[in-house]
Structure formats: C-alpha cells, structure tokens
Length: 258
Image (cartoon, rainbow, N blue to C red; front, side, top):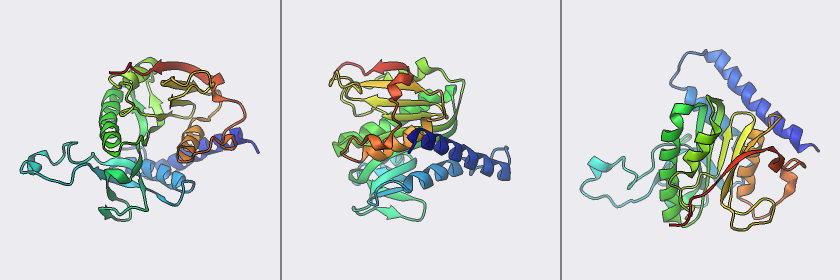
C-alpha cells in the first residue's frame, strides 16, 4: 500500500472535480461558485469521519440569552459565529436547527470548523485569519476544549510564506485558544501546528510548520490530519512512510504566555 500515491490521488480528484464543475458553469463569477468548493470538501471528508460527527454549513450560537440590544448586536460574536463554510459537530447532541445543508448548534456541540477558499489571495489573508481566529477563540474559550480548525484553499495567488506565518502567529498568545491548527495551501503546501515536537525532543514546542512537497500531497495531508484529529491513537498507517519533516520550509513559534 502506498499512502504517498493515495495522497496524490486525493489532490488529483479534488482538482479534477473542481475543474469539471467550472467547465460546466464557466469561468465567470457565479454566486454558487463558493458553494460547490465547500460541497466538494464536505462530501469528501464526510466519507471518512466517524458516524457521530456531522458535516454541514452552519452557525454556532454562543449565548442563547438575548438582552434588549439583540436587534442591534445580533451579528456580534457575543451571540453567534458568522456563517461557517464547514461546521463539524457532535451528532449525538441535539441541534438548535437542522436542514439538508444548514445546521445551527450550541458551542458545546462543535468539533471543528473549516474555511474554504477557491483561490486564497495575498490581500485576503489578514481578514480571513483575523475573522477565523475570533470564531475559534470564542468556541475554545466557552467549550474549554480545543477544536479542529482549518483553512482549505484549492489554489493560492501571490503566496508569501513569511507573511502568512506571521499572520498565524500575530496576537495568538500561548493559551492556544485562537490557534488555527491546519492549513492547506493548494496542492503542495501544508501548515500544521504542533503542540509537541514531531521529532519527540521537546514537549513544550508550540510551532507552526510550513511544508512544501515536491509532489502533490498537501490536500491528502489536510484530509488525514483531520481524520486522525478525532482519534486517540497515533497510527502511522494513515501517513506516507517518509516523514513530512523532510519537506519543512519554514516555521513560527507561538507568542509567549501572557
């Protein structure tokens, strides 16, 4: 069994499906283009996640008690998240609302959130990362448990690895509440946050590693890091035999404790 070739096939499948839909609807802007990119990823990861984890577009309600200022502040993060491209939630808990393609859950049901981009552009990075961090921070703080958090970009435009890592690191603080822990940047760049040193040397590590693969492996690593995030076992069966640390391009350490 070659997991390396399997990861490459995942990349190829994503790109082929994305292009096939684009050929059908054309390259001009359509309101639904973002939706099909999210749908492709939702469909794929739902095949592999445990049955108790739901996958949908949705919202997270942080505070169900609404004061007199609710109408003014109803979109504020004090009350709920913004719409999340992909919301992973605990299906064993009740939902506040559920339809075929939308769920609304309380914060304690959240297992993970993913932002999906067809093309991630350099001038979007700050706003995307900042908004995503605020959602993550609020969920982790109220849930008192670190969720899976990921950004998945099919393509990247004008990519600057230093500035992207700087944005991840900026104003994060070592309480880990607003750490984005997995990022796929096109077909060959992947970022993972390590609390512990992957070389087993330092248990007090707290670094993002940016990997640039010679082959098209990034999407496969994103998918299977998501799957293994919800298991207690460190099963190497899921990953290629060659460690991804040999592809390490750059890293950033989290800010010091406040």
